[in-house]
Image (cartoon, rainbow, N blue to C red):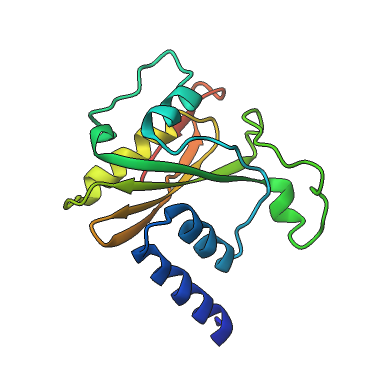
Length: 171
């Protein structure tokens, strides 16, 4: 059962999303949930900067599926590795503070701010799926839209015939 202090921290962190600083609010919420890492990347928060940094595939990023024209900003929050999860509370990663695109045993956390509009679950799932297609590791998204907040996680599994590939399943 969740203690009162933790519940209060989460409530305070959620209220921060009504302000304008998406990055600070997102980091505050994830921290209150126990997710934090020093592995980050200093990147402009524009949608174009996001694509320039992360769209390195042969397959073209589907701006239609991702509703890219409705993105106001996107923040790379951090990368948390399996070692950090296993060693939670231990200062084992003190000098290793950079984003590592080659560490497949990790999770990426992003915050996405969308234009005010109503978004269906399908639209939010399509955004999540399209962003996750850019990475070898799962990307978790905090999506702020029309006064609401969605924490979007996708299920990945190995391809049944080609173990070098992943299949994205339900969001």
